[in-house]
Image (cartoon, rainbow, N blue to C red):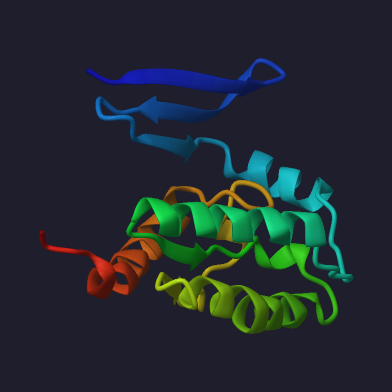
Length: 153
């Protein structure tokens, strides 16, 4: 049995959240114009500064997973294109590839990057949550990226 929640804005239904029986959930846009308006109200950032305390926390989490024998795969999920200004996207990609990826792989974990080509603002609800069309594009790409890292035992 699934549960459905209707999300409203000013009394008007704008989305539906469907909760599946095994913990899955899907957020479905009903009013796309509303969500494009939400995006236009969100900020665009051009600067990127790594958060060193969060980096240390991430490294600690990686260490804990390694010690516990967790089969971990780290995946990068990018925000909606409208949030990036100037060189910010390239700065973040460089940080992920040159700082995060080596830390992940040095502990024996997999690091994957999914191809985001063709995924536009219209595929997001807001600045970082994919809508149903974005999920339809992203999920098969993620499945392919994860396939080589899944254990069969």
